Structure formats: C-alpha cells, structure tokens
Length: 223
Image (tube, rainbow, N blue to C red; front, side):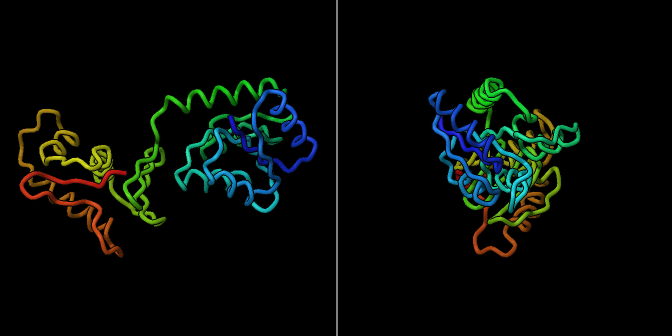
C-alpha cells in the first residue's frame, strides 16, 4: 500500500511516517495544500490522509479539486475541526472518512484499511468518454473541464449511453430506460431529447459526443 499524507504539523507528520513505516506501508508526506493536490493527482497512491488547515490551499479545496478531476482514491480527512458541520462538509466534499485530532494511530490505520477495502468493491461514480466526464454523485456533466447544465432527463439519457460506451443503443432501449420497461409509444421523442442534449454537449467543440447510427440508434465512444 502507498499512502500520501498531507499534513503541515511536523510532529504529527513524523508520527504518521513512523507508524506507516512500522506497518510496512510506503508513505509520502507533504506539508502544503497545492503540493498535496499535485501529488494526489499523480495517481500513485492507494489512499490519502488529508489535513484541512493547510498553508497555501485549504484541505477541502484540495479534496474538491481532486474529485472534480475524477480521482477516486480513498481520502481520510484528519483535522482538529471536530464540529459536526465540519465533518458533514468534509464528507459531502468527497471524503471517505473523518478522524479528529488527537487520534490513535491504530484507529487511523484500521479506518484507512476499511475505506481501501470499500474502494475495491464500489463502482466508479464518474463515467468518462474522451473529454466528457459524468459525475454520478453530484449530477454534473463536464466536457474539457467546462460544466454543462442539463436537465434530469438529459442526464439520465447521457448516463445510459455512456454505460454502453462503444455500443449502439436503440431508441426503444432509451425510451424504456427513461419512462417504462414495456414502452409501446413513439420513439421519436428520443430524437428530440438527443438533439437538444447534443447541442449542449457540442457547443464550442468541433466533434460530436453522441453519434447517430442510421437506422439503429445512438452511440458514445467508450471511455
């Protein structure tokens, strides 16, 4: 296991490095928020221990930027801010667990191992197709870093297409997904929704995300 520690307190930082070393875990430690984000985005870590009150960039901002980039590495927030509202903010921003200082290293290690086990079995909450990202948790659509506002129906339609990335999805499949498992009505309404969604996704770009497969349906490139 490789763990990233983002903590500016030198005493706590040393204690964590020593504890991880004794547990046979590789540990990289940084003491500043921006540097922590850069390390976290490298994708080399199995888990992150993240302080909140960091110099340069607040821990919640580090966490928000990390999740916005699509990184799903488990994050344990470690902080002196123990109020309920602070814990809720951390969890809503994308933390997997929260531990308040002072803490026992054995508990921290157990919590870290638990969130890593959960991460192995849970599906990714972000779908990707080229420069298009679909955040299932926060119901956000991003293309090339730009957020695109869509309706709930358009979001559900796009999610379905992306889950079948690289495959053709028929109009009837989309109707049944959106409205009824035994849809018997006209499928022409799907063309209206797809055209409206395509207009939003492709505005300002040269290529289209959703391809029309003549006589068959639609397809989005595999992620």
